[in-house]
Image (cartoon, rainbow, N blue to C red; front, side):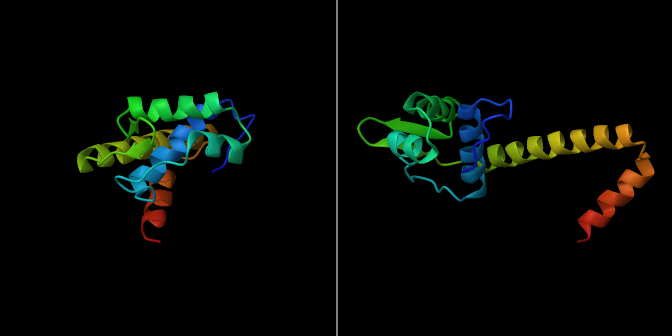
Length: 121
């Protein structure tokens, strides 16, 4: 897990986003426990409170369930929800790419050609 201290995004959000990505990609499997809050905090050299905030956010969003005395368990994922999450990420990335292209003076035609090349790789 990579934590950027000066990214402008709170550390707990960085943790939650990376764990969401791991859940959506299948790296963290259904019914698998997340690393312990204390263990992850120690590994990342951050506070337990920050780690707990990340796990609580994941629980709030339905990715995990807190099991008293055991930790946080990855919930079964709805395939439609997973697809929707991926579509949102793609949309965000494409929006950023379009903005960057406009700033660089790249035409829509050139941008589409770049996308076509990337899709055939």
